[in-house]
Image 1 (cartoon, rainbow, N blue to C red):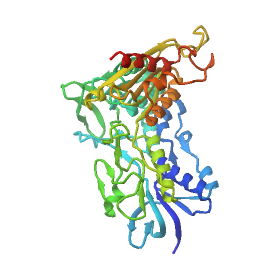
Image 2: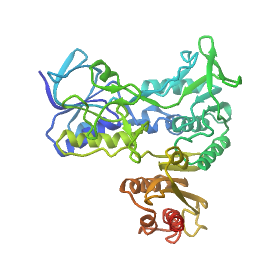
Image 3: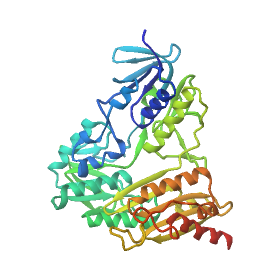
Image 4: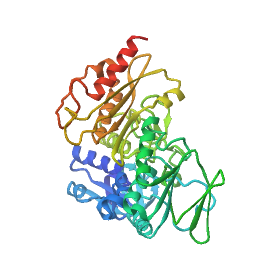
Length: 450
């Protein structure tokens, strides 16, 4: 009987991060990693297949780095686990494990809409073959509807608009008052929508799809208010659900909506079986309450936590901060932690600090984004940062990472106001007008004057 030190089921962010963590700490460990797909796509890169990369093969995580470290990647589906014998069964074969990690990720959430089974209706699967089908269908499509105005829907619509130009009508349908509203400040949502409109994207907010109509393939999208939209292709981008199939089939405790049940060390309720990534339950770093945050960055983090615990380093999962970044048209957006709306929903008293200024100094430098904006959100009771949002140039991506670290470190408005920073004319705002310092300073003085 073949035996491995660690068997990992799933080869995306969580599984790969765990495998790398294990091999870097214990190079001699035998790590066998199973995946169902021939190649692993870069999850966050999927929308960019269609407008920027224009080729599914350009959005693939190369196996070579992992195989060079001795990670044994096998294309096979694991269905059965013998928990007593510590044996995994796949494709008519089996392997024993010392430790097992389930990292099966998520599946697209498909809403129960009448007609959802019609042809040319696609959810975003993390499978290159399925992604290629979407690319092929988009090529001949004239009327394209995206259901869902979160990050997936917005990025897909932007990239399809770049691909199709004026040759197609592209429409987003979103239930909330604005696209991206579950994650970022409302004024930045409005900016994202303006960018999409410049690209020719039609946006229906406060809207709900109740039916898809057509014969063999979709032809119409019917809204709750009775309006309808012509459609050759419909793309569903309303979020993801945990892939708990393997847990369900093998009596590993799980919650169908939340995911596989794990403790803060990524251990399931079954000895020597761990789970990490989109397939497991999440909780908020800020409140400790259950959270629906499913991101590749969170999955990678949990994979690192799981990998360390598998090899004996006791590392605790502190919860999901929820840090996002994206670029829509000419504007980059970043978000970490809570918005003002989520603070109000959780009854957290807060103070927000703001600053608007150029992303370079002097502002007369070429390609300066002159009105880059930071909004930082702090608790009133202890002054600690619990949220931050950035709008502007590509600098927003790394600036929001600073905010995410500040949230995890429990930094206060005073500490961020006094943060020592590196600045350079071509790379950052002025040392006397750095966005995080100044937004934190604005909040600091508001808190002082309460």
